[in-house]
Amino acid sequence: MKFTIPTEEDIKYLNEELTKKNAQERLVWAAKTFTPGIAVSSSFQTQSVPLLHLVSQSCPEMPVIFIDTGFHFPETLAFRDMLKEKFHLNIHIIHPTITKEQLILDYGTELYRRDPDLCCYINKIEPMQRATAQYQVLVAGVRHDQTKHRNALRVIERRFSGPVRIHPIIDWSENDILQYITEHNLPAHPLTAQGYTSIGCAPCTQPTSRETTDKRAGRWTGKEKTECGLQIDFDKKQIGAGE
Ligand code: SF4
Image (cartoon, rainbow, N blue to C red; front, side, top):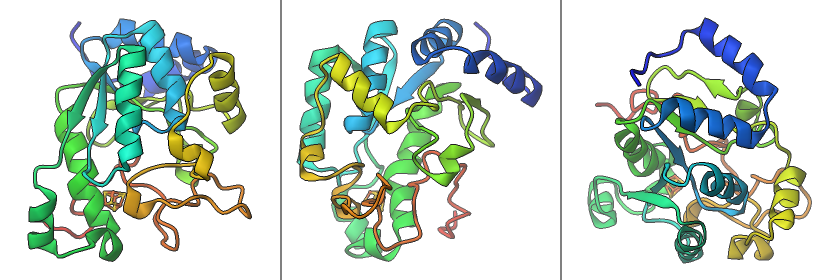
């Protein structure tokens, strides 16, 4: 099919329709409408499991993009490989353009501590932009209850640049995730049992304190940062990295 970027008017109409559907119906519609111009991105944490399971049930051929920043927990990579086998996922692993050694030579050690936005740009955003350049639509497993920014997202969103986003589980709660995992007897990321309620790169992820209800409180703890930039319109100029 020839893809035409939807207008804001189209997006409004589609959101009215898609809001009435459940997650699986949204995914089936998206796969049917946009294949082969559609992929799904995943960080392979416990929260990712229901969407990956729905993909395996509804559209198993859909490419699943995983950005291997080089900073993931070994448990995440093992969990990814286990889910690939279990769900027969069509995973595409994408790496940053520079090695970790080159990153240190160019920017010094612990860039993630000194300038996490630049580190995320080099290791996550640029690889994702490169990986998705061939797709018109990208499916993501974000939810309203995760961050203030995500709370404002709709089922389908246009971006200033890059693919149109589709969020099949945008209106799910944490309980919906847990209920789906229980009902379908699905596995959890091994670090979840150790108190990690949201899991990204190892240097920027801690177990979540028992005193908070914010499941993402263990991400970039002590910093203003709450998003790596994959879910917002974020480019190199905005983070002062120059061109
Ligand atoms: S999450 Fe941390 S280590 Fe990973 S790319 Fe971003 S700043 Fe770097």
